[in-house]
Length: 177
Image (cartoon, rainbow, N blue to C red; front, side):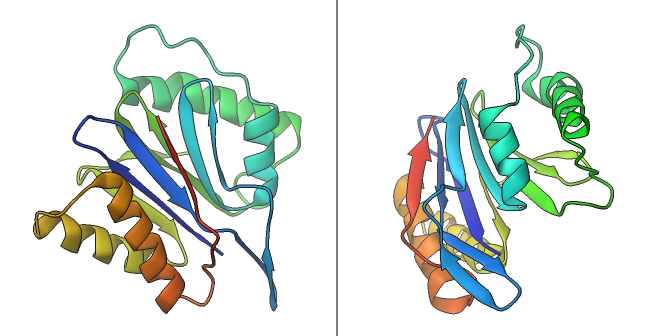
């Protein structure tokens, strides 16, 4: 599985980090292809299907953002384009693929699930994947203790997940928008 972590900085920048583990059955691989990337002003972090990640990275075209509410854009225009692209490549979101991903967009953090629902995170941080609960605990403690620097908190959450989750491994990749 994996761990992807995102947090909003005090400057409303989305900072995201990912591990490099690729898990299939009883194998752990350290992959070169990153689980996070920036495309057209969006910051993506994927968990689950590498195929969906690759399709979004190399094929998805984004509908124009015309100043509407960011959540409205994600739920309508973005998800409609995503669903169309997944159908084009015969990815059945109801049964074929298990995936979720975090999107940093317009100073917001969204989580898109395999059923294409969009969730907006209230805490200013989130995590997905096998190490998510560990990472979220670390982010929560950092925020409550008043020592929350988004980049440092993301790195520490990834390190905690690597330490206590068998399915999360460095090297870590950090990006921000």
